[in-house]
Image: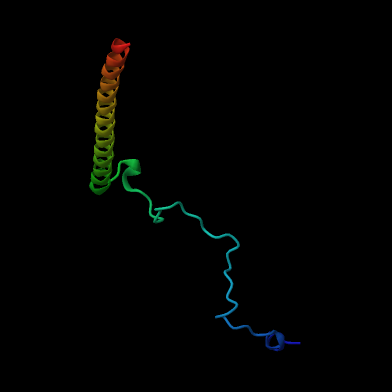
Length: 95
């Protein structure tokens, strides 16, 4: 039997519905990876440095805002405590 006869005997499949990848394993990348290598062996370019500086600045501003909120909260609590102490002293003096 010739090769031509053998290939005609195989069932034909449509590629649109049963297309299979020849690869047994899919390629996995981390979030944000583009597949390109970084230039400079980790030194990065000016854009990456600028972006990192911007992110650092944003985080620093957020931390300063949180610190200011905590300081305001402490000051408010200290004022409330002082008021409560004065009231307790007045009540203890009346007895």
